[in-house]
Image 1 (tube, rainbow, N blue to C red):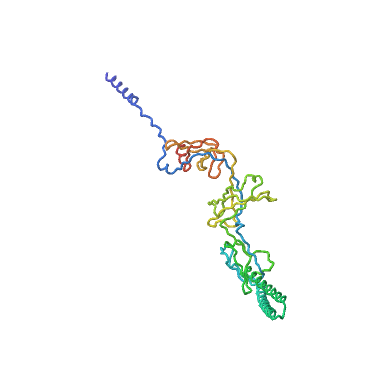
Image 2 (cartoon, rainbow, N blue to C red):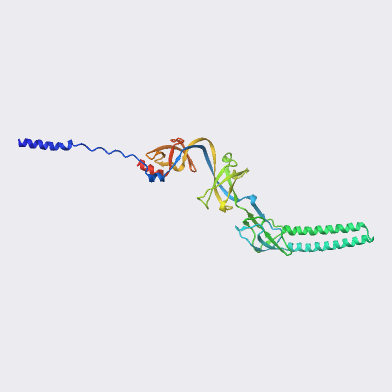
Length: 360
């Protein structure tokens, strides 16, 4: 009997674990965006935009030719001093250089002679008038004397006008002055330079660069895509992180016979005078291809495992990883062929953190 009782107790003890209730399985925890992460992301909306493409051109910055004046020597002589250097800013009327010239000295001689001739003509006129009143000569002689005075006066006036044009005084020095306010963008003279009176080269070029031009070449196959008034963005080596924006101002009708390229001119403001003549620039011109397509910010697109994704945001607990078909990215805009509809919201900043949290 005892043995039977022990056997039953042992069997009951062995069955106790099987009789106890099993623990309930843990429920899957739903994803929720934390308050911290919610403040770190940026949400944007997919929208329909015209389909655009772009041309990338190489350009060269030049001064606005309507605001550039070349300064030529009006006389020959020896350059005594040069007061400015390349790149200096000058005011209108500021002295650029001084030239000692024999031609200027000759102007003074001509002026002295002309004034002496005028005094003599006026004296002869008074004598002729006195004789006419005394009936000792005719009126014809008075008229002739009057004409001599007028001729001498005209010569004096001519010399004074030459003085005014040349900006010279009663010395042999000719002063070269700035015709406008601006920057010295070209300098072709140094102290001691001998200048001929028939010199065809300019001494200085003064230009205003508050507005500048960019000249860029467009391939023959792309000419039809470029129109006046188009917006153009420029980047330079000097300021790689800064974007300068202008407009296509003119299309030159003559193609370069060697490159078969057409030159386009882009006008743009130059705040801070950062853009300098002869700088090189990368020019981007965007144009419409026709048609429309859904777009999202380019930074919202995630590339992973040879596919493109966006994080569609409905609420902090409802975020979907959605595959999309990307047509192309243009600047800060991504054109989505399929996978997104206009009006849907996507995460456009720090979306990789959310993507990793949902898909790891």
